[in-house]
Image 1: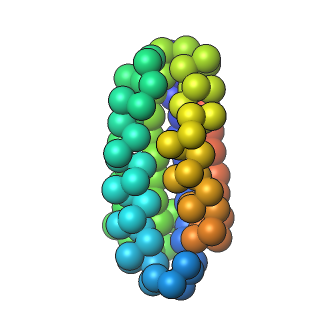
Image 2: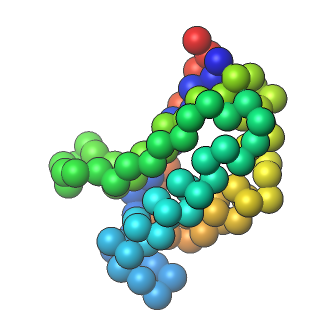
Image 3: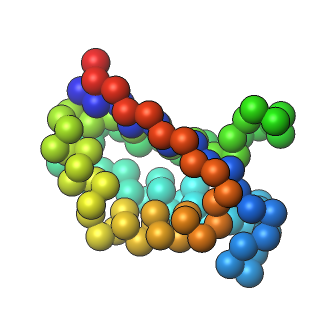
Length: 100
């Protein structure tokens, strides 16, 4: 199984919306990808609850049965569209994948 974790910080203003609106939009759009590909076991999206310097604004936690399932998710057209939007509203990104 592959665990895939991604965290982002968002701009205060981007794409005509404020941070809170973009966080809600991205949370909804990522959550809508749940079950997008065979082999996706889980997908959770959460908005951070603190604004400490070391914290991120939004996290995606997902699990995939295989590396191929993760690749299918990453390259799926529906995911690509969401990722492109996130690229326009984020200021930082950190990702970590590991096998268990």
